[in-house]
Length: 342
Image (cartoon, rainbow, N blue to C red; front, top):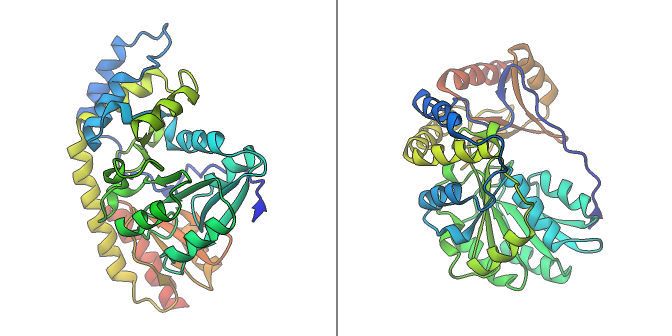
């Protein structure tokens, strides 16, 4: 267990960007045209609708919950920060995976909370019984983990999620589902009625190609959400973001279809690279693939020469966002060249 003082670093914005798990495609032109028209009707001189009704109704329809189960914020990051600010303080403990999304550490450090991490297996899978036992022994105050896991791409099964919720049933558990649209598993949202300690975060930044507008959601049982809505920052989302997000939600079927295409490109790329000798790659249920090599600096130099930006970690691992077919071909060319050389 340790105190975490960590500074969050934003991602590079030039080159072929396969480092932040964004969509490589912008919104379709038909949606952009509708957004442009809608901008004429926004009352820019008025504060946003703090009830978020239009957006919450639209997203509730997409994921099959009630508006009362939802709260929207400035990206799912803000919702994670809200949960951490609600349940953590100095001498309280956030419990998460190692590795997992670095923003958990960042927000915990803002509240002087401790961070306890449970090591995942090399492929990202979890010893669920060991995780529960360690959490109980250390009297943790809040559990947060990504599903599918970032950066491994491994997705806990529904049965594993239920085990965690049952085993730590007196502790709020936040399941961060930023990448769930790319997984084969069901969303933990289907468990809401069964578990009062379950909270789920979702985002429009990944599968819905809206990283630029910063729109995310917190989902839980109605009584939980009454409390969270009271604690939420007033006017957290601006009128422009809410209008764009509401329009995007009307076209959910387009983005669900694109997520399926991304999964196909991911699986096709993995089939091409899984047997490489110089790099170990891991199967993924997200829109990225994680790799590991002892010659990482040579590999990064090859990507840099091709103006391709991937996510580099402090150890010998890296992560590549699934791009377009053309981008994936360029990735494959670099990896094959590296394999031949090393």
